[in-house]
Length: 187
Image (cartoon, rainbow, N blue to C red; front, side):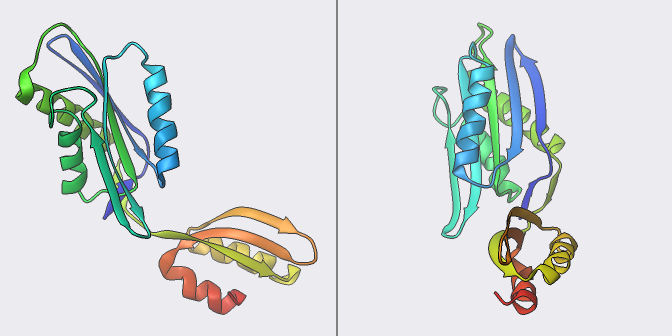
C-alpha cells in the first residue's frame, strides 16, 4: 500500500474547460470533509467538484467517489480507478471543473478528470504507507528523554503531553513498534 507524501496539484485546459486537481493525504473522514469544503469554497464559480478517496480504518478500507453531477462514471470513478490501481490509502483526490462551453462526451470527461487527477497524484509523490496508532503513555520524569528519543527513532510524533505527578503523553507510532513501546514503557 502507498500514501501521499505531500500535496500534489495539477491543472489543464481541455477544449476550453479548465480542470484543477488536488491530491492530499487524509487520515480520517473529518479531514477529508474539511479539505473538500475548503477546495469547493476556493473555487466557488466552478461547475463540478468530483472526488475519490480511500481511508484505512480499523474495519477495513472506506472508499467512495462522487461524479458531482457529471454523467455517471465519468468523473469520480476514473479517479477511484487510479487510487485502487496504485493501492493508495489515506488519500483523497479532488478535481474541479470550470465548464468551457464545449461538451467533451463521456470518454472525454473520463480522460480529462482521470488525467488531471493522475498528474496531481504523481506530484503528491506516493510513498509506502505506514500504519500508525496512538498510545497513551505515563512515565516517570527520569524516562521522558528516553521516550522522546524512542518516538523520534521510530519516526513517530508526540501529539499531547501533560506534566503533573508523572509525565503523560499521547504518541503516534508505527503499529509494528507498539510491542517495543509496551516493553520499554509498561503499556
